Length: 168
Image (cartoon, helix red, strand yellow):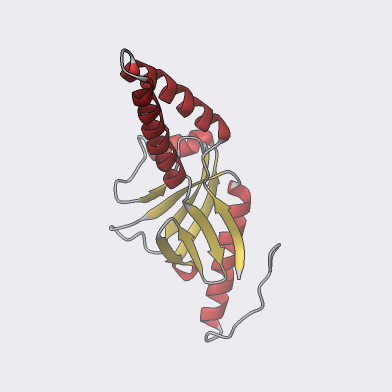
């Protein structure tokens, strides 16, 4: 069962800006050519741009009772050491001067807040996950609830607990 789910879709404003850029570039490329070439150029540029924006916005964040899925990656909640919701400045610091090149990042430039998920034991190959989100407090709370439940389950010998939270 899902405790939290979010799709990192591209905002409408970005689609408008990209369409404007396609119009400018298409007009530059089309100058002096026939109307048929104009249609081909605009269609090709807009299609390519739409595919890029759709692919970029297809990433999802899902927290279930047992794991966190971000993009194509999966992290068992029992492996989570700490969860922190971050604001714009904290997110910028972890993307810049305080960044660890081994960290897993699923961020988008239109998402200015994030959640930092520290991995138990801070393994060198992936010490933390930085996940861009529109709702950092909700995501962090869902991960924390799952982390506590996973630890309780491990301490009780794996007995299942009923799901709690807004979606459970």
